[in-house]
Image (cartoon, rainbow, N blue to C red):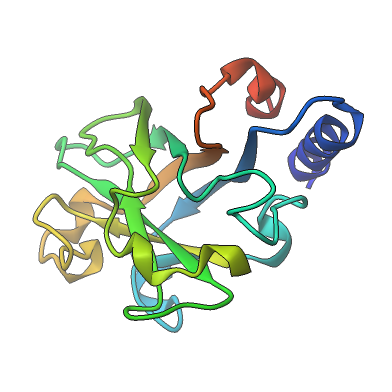
Length: 197
């Protein structure tokens, strides 16, 4: 709770105190331990960790297209793998945007880099290049994020289905997603204070 409170305070101040146009924001910053029991009992879908309500950043824009265009920008994905079972099994987390209003598939997903051991992994992804990004009506905003632990076999490689599930669970990670507006460049200095907690 302390981390979350300070995180909201820092980001809220960034929004309210800055005189310049906001060109990036933290979508969420979650540190959690995930066991096979968690994967088997998560509802409505297995292997899911749900980021909802106050787990999301307080000042997420209701419209991602205007006045600042986040829909056509990038997302900076940072995962800190704090604990992972022995064996260096390739693992990733799929990160799914769940919109207030969708079309077609009704949601879209990007992912972390594949990792085999503890450490920090970062990547930047175009908001126009990930799976089913056009199924989200971005002008209506996002209501939650669904995080799914998988192997490296593709979209259906849910870790809980593996016979050797002990290679994936338990795990402890910290995942942070920072949305960067079209034409802007990710600036880590704006979120360094968040990442200290």
